[in-house]
Image: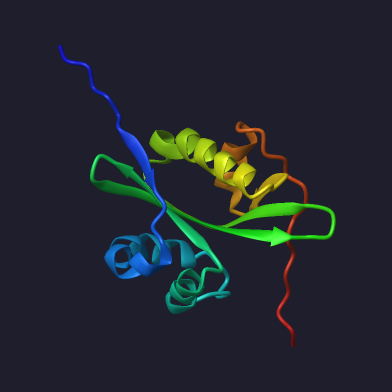
Length: 144
């Protein structure tokens, strides 16, 4: 009986390499955008990467893409927040702990004091077990 090793790694491609990674990242990002409330299109996200507004992290198991995470630093007068607008992927149980470790390292490099994301109820349940706090709820209503 052999031992199965899960080989998870992260790639943070430079914006100049967008053409190399976009065809791999875009399908996962597109799935996540279905739950974004229409705030962004796939083209908006690509432009944010091209301009350097956001950094993208690809999470892989060997050569297979499992997830894409986007990160942006938001600087307030009193602190810097690492905002995570997009988390898109599959088999989250394989990569979540590893991704949070890498995100924490990235946040420290940028002197961020906390990371923030928003998500649906499933993410809330999962991230509460990873020391995330439910700080507020977003309420919305169409302007009539």
